[in-house]
Image (cartoon, rainbow, N blue to C red; front, side, top):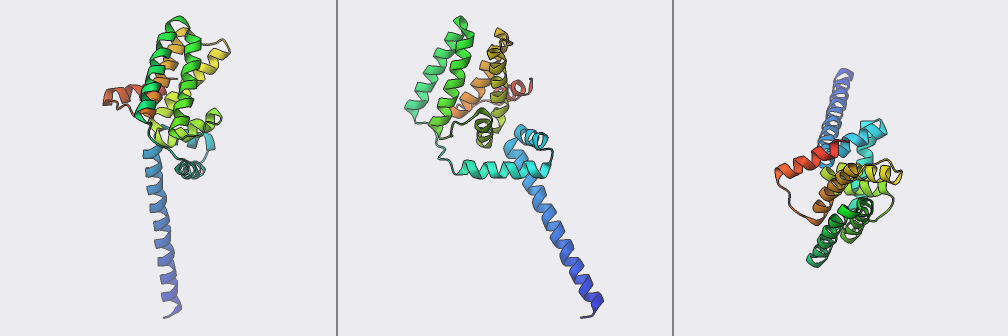
Length: 192
């Protein structure tokens, strides 16, 4: 084989390798975008780089895969549903306490499912792996709860936080949602 032929073969191999890498990266991006939904965009905005964001999301996936995430036993799910109804009833008389109790109940449900209950940002990131459509709701509800703690949230905003929390609560419990309910949860999560 002459030098020209060798150069052509090397160029062809390099071109195929580059095309293969581009195809792999495109498929990875599509998979992560589909899995993480709005959290994918958020990760890119936070990291400032699509490549860094995707790497972070893949590491998060691998970390969450090591958790022992399990569905709730029927008795536990029923107990949590009863607690949620009590919290909703409490909202009428004491919205602040109800919101605080809802936040606590969500953490209890997450722990019962097998998620470690660390600081909020870590908890939200871990939830995004399996509940991507609802993590925006969780973040929005938490932001309202923080504003309330500073004395800057109205009762209407706390009611909205309860709606945000309810969307994630139902998803964690495995309550099926119809298409309009899912769309409302997404819309509510994006209207911050």
